Length: 324
Ligand code: SAM
Image 1 (cartoon, rainbow, N blue to C red):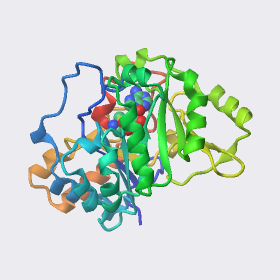
Image 2: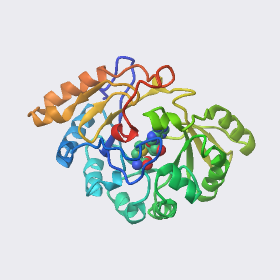
Image 3: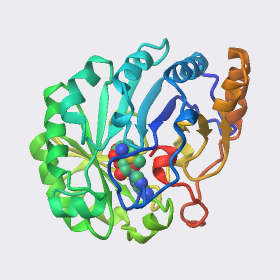
Image 4: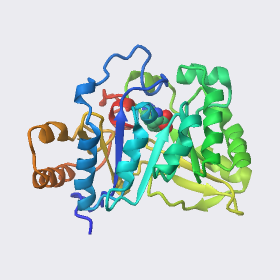
């Protein structure tokens, strides 16, 4: 039974856990170059605290967890943490979002530790463009990581492309690449998280969706995962492309998720400020009953929707801090 039901009747069964706010890339829309606001390591939840808190969540109805960040594969012994979370009673699905720079040597261990699904970020197939958008020349490493993930048996592998003015001309190349390699492509509208993201040049994905539907003869498709993407697929079922459109068509009425930052703060919405600090609670000696009560109280705070369109300057939090 799920006790995690908010004021708007939404069942919260999915938690995105930022296991670190550090990253080896500097994607222009995410962490600005020179960013200095990283969380102090002594504030990071340790593995025992994470396991305990997620265990209490799972007892209340949480079913799915995704590790994100920052770059989750940079957290020391993240594979060990995966194994602990994957075996928590009630957790049915453990997935991970990664930039894949470390994936070539970690894919097999992650799979063995119980990670079921992988999302990999890739905004361009051109090395110089990756260097510019993502701040480091890592295309070869990312492609090697994708190869390793396939070799380790991850399926489906979803490839996340944030679409902005600079890479919009590569959408068809990315579709062809994903068709050839058997990846699910997801196109994402850039969200106004901080000034740099706001400068990236928003591209409305609705016309792109209509064009791809026509060009590749795609039809509406559903994909398990419970996320916000709306999918189109080829008639033979071999290719799928998802559209994550927080700006042109928001999906707040079906939002089933909350986000826990590396320092133990639960954010009830990516685009709003409602939050609850579980690190302070746990370190002050809260019992499991106290945690249960606090979780239910927090779920009650979940706002109806974000306001990226009406108030694009409202949010001063960068994506690496909340966990994208
Ligand atoms: N480092 C991991 C990765 O690269 O996937 C996980 C963290 S990253 C913050 C998660 C996702 O958020 C990535 O797909 C990234 O492209 C996306 N993202 C970051 N900032 C964004 C923004 N302003 N708008 C839309 N997507 C964003």
